Image (cartoon, rainbow, N blue to C red):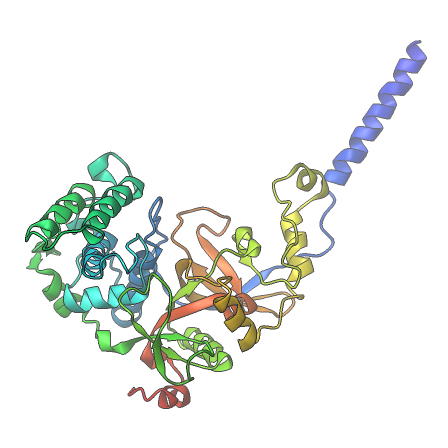
Length: 398
């Protein structure tokens, strides 16, 4: 009996050592990345439970512009932009009897409009996000329910006339949840209004900023309002052929510029978080974090190795079809600020998100150019970042 037990023990030790070796077995191939160009950006923020990506990405873009032009870091106030935009959107919804969407979303042009017409303030000029209702970050779920009911009752009501105070009631709701919009504030020992802060400190010329897109249902080199609900101001976008659209983005980053990036993020590959691809087989299962991944190694790396060199070849027809079929929507606003290359020679854009410190790159992702070509809705960019020949076709004065 003792002999049998000793043999059994030896077998178990041997089997255990084999299992340990299998666990540590390295992946045969892997992707590594080197930076080609990385332009300065401010820190990653967290929009938390709010549909305000457009505010975080557009102000993150302007903060990067200020780093580029002034070599100075600003923390611009998303709450100021959001509250002004929500109030304007409510007025539009009521004016059109609810025939324009009223939601938490927005567009990059909302930031341009705000800085141009209302000004801006630093983050500390308004209450810390969430602090007025006992949270530490944005949480607009309750706010959205309250304001949607308020605006909907007015927009869809059967009133013959509206009272002159309905806007004040809405302002009171926003002040309770977000804070009172400052008439003036102190910054670095000097008092400013939101407009004088833009004029004297930021010194950004809003006429330098344009939105670009690429769709074939409107003529190229013309402007049109992208037909999505969050483009409620009907902001115009310059329309480029896809190859020139991609050329602008690549050229801009290499020349030291960033741009705000609006894109569809509903594709399964975006759930990979760190490296986003547009694989030909879009139904590849993601096993990272599963029991299978635990025993078989780094399934995410295996996913990258398998699909990074096997992406779709994007055409204008594919983009248009995806837009027309609601497969490409205006899901999310982000910031593109750099380029990296993998060890196979493939290039990716560096993207700053607004979901906080959520992955191994701490809120930064690498986005393949195929994904950008297929799933970009539009971008906000400094017109001086556009190659001269393309700017000439758009009749832009540089």
